[in-house]
Image 1: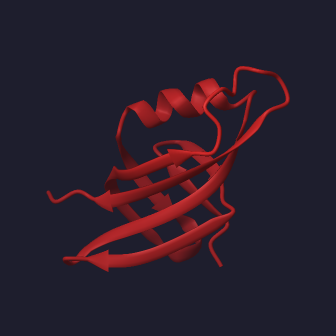
Image 2: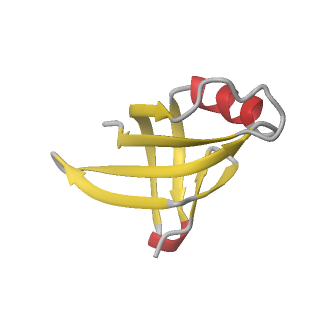
Length: 94
């Protein structure tokens, strides 16, 4: 069971993970929580759009781009808030 991934150098603990191949490329769908304290760092990271994706538990590494993205809450600036992020990353063709 996959419990974490690394986007660039940022470790993210997961609530849910799915992997599939789409036209021969890796695609992962993940769900994870973001606290108001982590919000700025995660938002800055996600704005990049493309990442070095490492899934240690699955021995999987690829360069991936955000294909789908959503969050359960849009204002994590208020202290003590937790948002659920859903993200789908698709391997980029080289």
